[in-house]
Length: 197
Picture: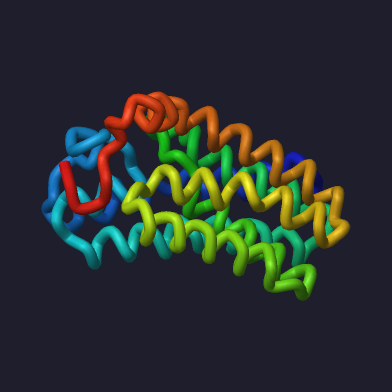
């Protein structure tokens, strides 16, 4: 299994649009026509089905974790490539004309995978703590996700894993680009809070 195959494996797993699939199975309609039109868990929550949003969150995380761990089992050097593939698959899925999610849950799944591979829980713990903590304080999902993503390469640098700094920084920059509309609304004070329209 070469680098191209690792990227493809990650992309195919990452591109599975669980939010869209689950809402259709549950009879909640086309997720792209609801709320923000995003296929992630936050928009699934706008259907009023918390269990469906939670399941979407878990599965979007799991596909990032699975891609990295499967590739690492074949060759340790392939794990970062699978991570890139999984993340790009989620945010730019070919099946949805490259209009996917914003990548927070999948990036957390990738962080969890590297916590497992490196034996250091801090990638996943810092990400989860900042993500959840920010949301609990502000009730703004996008702010929590972006804050957690920004601290991920910082965590890798503190742990001395500068190879992972490059990986996490690249994924974080893409995530921030996908959140550019949220940043504009945050600056304007119009970003919606969880529990409100």
